[in-house]
Image (cartoon, rainbow, N blue to C red; front, side, top):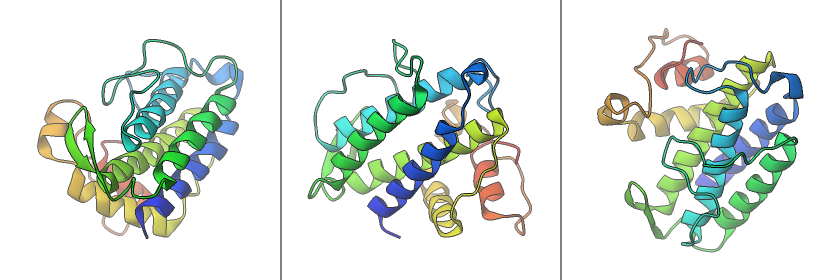
Amino acid sequence: MDTYDALQQAVTSTEKIVAGVKAGQLDEATPCTEWNVRQLLNHVVSAMGLGAALLTDTTPEHPSPPGGLPDVDLVGDDPSAAYQRAAEALLAAAGTKGALDAGHETPLGDMPGAVVGGILTLDVLVHGWDLARATGQDVAFDADLTTHVLGFAGQAIQPEMRDGGLVGPVVAVDSTAPVLDQLVGHMGRTP
């Protein structure tokens, strides 16, 4: 699976989950224990905006630190619309000729566009799972996509990322468990 296809599938799958979030659920707790649903949505929208800026070598409109929150509420009263706007901008940037092949300056240093795309895919997909879990929705990500993202996560998530708090400690999951359970366990969540 190529980087753009994986990103597009993750964004589209998570978009369905975001559309299912009800206004009364925005203050609910999430598997990201430091964030409620609104904060998690703000993180995802902000990360997609940052990704679009990185892939086009521009300054993000609403900067936030990696793994952090923007200084303003980006989701307002319509999280689905905010997500759609950010998703369209991200996919347009990722679809720009050469964006996923070129190197880009990021807050974490210079990175190939494919790595930026992979990190965004991982972030959007896993946080889609977080949102589904927090709001009582079923999660049905494509098995090939989930396998692809698990492979990327196995290479990209370094011990210092766990020590620094960007990613939680691995939660042991049986190797015969569904791939999505293995992925979320690898990312520090209990399936």
